[in-house]
Length: 289
Length: 298
Image (cartoon, rainbow over all chains, first blue to last red; front, side, top):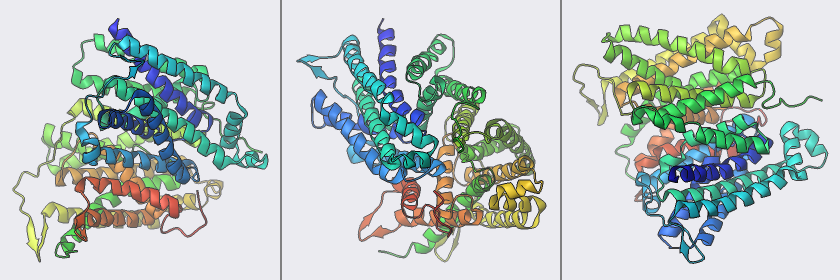
């Protein structure tokens, strides 16, 4: 039972992370490789605030969300001026700057040792040490975030985001401010990634830079690609499927040193084969005039 | 600011720059031709050094035999990578090739980790290596080989680009793709040659890194991003700009951590972060690269 609750919590965390990325990448077609960097900023903010400054749950999640969003605005100022290849390189560089800081700024982040002993949140005077209690808390937030994003996905804003992705000049000729629309999607997605990071730090109690590597980014990317970019329910189904997929590997007799790489390989092969079979209609090429 | 160690730093940056130049020129060639970013380029370099290690250490071949085996295997892997992971997607959105090369890089890393283990290895020359002191500069024979051979290989690359039929086709494609196809040059055939040449140069750089320092399966990402940094410095797809950018990157990295600025020095751990900061600043201020003068490409 404990194991099922653990998986459910993981699914909840990734639902926030992946659905936020779906707004940015699935609808806006922005190949934002810094999404996991925003996630790590959120996780470290929560970890530091709750251990060093002993702040409560509400302060931590709000600070994590806002700080990630702030970094997104800084990055967005550079990155959303760029197109395609340049955008991918710029965001990748940003994510490596963040991970270099996490590893090397030892006085703040304790480097590769990571931050331990993050306390569980206290809600109405009750410390959520039981995983079931934590699941209920995170489920409430997931519901909130998904409803929020569901309405965003159906709003005029999402339509203009999609329009600028498919044909920027046409969108601009209809008086859509493409740069602003892109920046806003960046802001929302990164803020929600920070929220997911906050819950990750609270749940695992221990974070280190290796949890936020490029492998994690590829996992989130796989969720979006498997679930069909831009599809709300598809990404939810994709998250549940991909989090549960490697679990049977636990019950096969595989040495633990290989297990992690088996998962990596599995996700990469799934990512590649989904792209291979849907190459014509996964990311529509820009529509001609 | 003490300047006694400046000559040593310059030599170190020349060594680092030579490695980056070999690693990144293939990336620039591929970008110039196919207009795709190959996120697996640094991983091809990593696979190259592990293949050399396999022939040299596991099968016990001499250096020449290992080199021949490594060239054959890397050429085959590069051929398969291009055929399966890149070419089927170039007709469609540019995002697809990002996704597939990222998947390819993960596949390489997971495969090498499972095959060879994740711990740090290094190639051994078999004989005792003494560093040579010359006017206060310490340099090992392998580092001299790195500097000289990279200059020689870049010379060969210049010959390949400027004096061979394939190089002529390559230049035609980077100038105007449709005009080149219009006179009947095959993009597919040219891209195979270019991609394999780039992968072999990267693999050579990998072997040199394996001899000079060490190797591990996670080194691929670091070199991919450094090759990107060099390419952004020189302008995307501009091969000689990228080579110049590589040497500049080596210089900036070594000078920034080696010199102390008015009593304050930057910790060595931030060395890698400089490549990424350079990318961000160049993209912010001069997105077309330092050596391209045309109007903004991005």
